[in-house]
Length: 246
Ligand SMILES: Cc1cc2nc3c(=O)[nH]c(=O)nc-3n(C[C@H](O)[C@H](O)[C@H](O)COP(=O)(O)OP(=O)(O)OC[C@H]3O[C@@H](n4cnc5c(N)ncnc54)[C@H](O)[C@@H]3O)c2cc1C
Image (cartoon, rainbow, N blue to C red):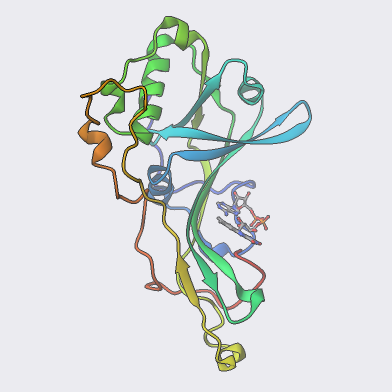
C-alpha cells in the first residue's frame, strides 16, 4: 500500500467547511484518526441508480485510507467507485439533558469523509486491506483465523477511500443553559453518559470441546469500545445557541 505523507491539518473544502456550530469542528487530522481508531462501524452514503443509500458497514483505517468491503454483488459497493461517497463514523458519549427541551443535545465525536473510493484488485493489496480491516475490529484475529483463499478473495469487493477530504465535529461537556434564565427553574440538568463495552465471549455451540478463546479475544471482555472519559470535564465553549445537538 502506498503511504503518502498527509498534512496534519485537514484541508477545508466547500464540502467539509462547517457552517453550523463551527466551534465544534476541528481540522486536526489527529482528531480524525482518533475517531477512526475508536470504532469499526461506519455508514457509507452513496447514490445508487439515482437514489441515496446509507449502508452500515465495518471499516479499517491505516491513517491513509478507510477500507470497507462486502460481496462483489453488493449494489452500493459496485456503484461506489464511480461516484463520490460520504462516509460517517459516529461515537455517542452521552445524552445532554438540559433544563429546556430546546437545549437538549448529544455529546459525540463524529467524522465525515468525502471521496471516490478505489476498488482494490491487486491480490497483495487486497490482502493487506483486508488485514487492516480485520485487525481494526479485532486486533490479533488476522494471525489467528484462516485467511481468505483465492475464491473467497474473488467474491469480496474491497474499497479504499483516501482520507484526504474529511471533517470532524466533537461535542463535550454540560448543557448550555446553566447560565441562562432556565437555571432558576430548579430542574436537574446534566449529562447521562453512554458507553459501549465488550461482554464475555460466547462460544459457538458447535465448538469442539477444549478449544479455549484466545487471549486477544478474552482480553477485550469488559473493556470499552473506543471510549473517552465521560463527565462534564470540558464544558462547551460556545454561547448557548439551542436547537438540538448541532
Ligand atoms: C450523534 C449525533 C446526534 C446529532 N443530533 C443532532 C440533532 O438532533 N440536530 C441537529 O441539528 N444536529 C445534530 N447533530 C449534528 C449534525 O450532525 C450536524 O453537525 C448539524 O446538524 C449541522 O448540519 P448542517 O446540515 O447544517 O451541516 P453543515 O454545518 O452545513 O455541514 C457542513 C459540513 O460540515 C461537516 N459536518 C457537519 N456536521 C458534521 C458532523 N456531525 N461530523 C463531522 N462533520 C460534520 C460536513 O463536512 C458538512 O459537509 C448530531 C450529531 C451527532 C454526531
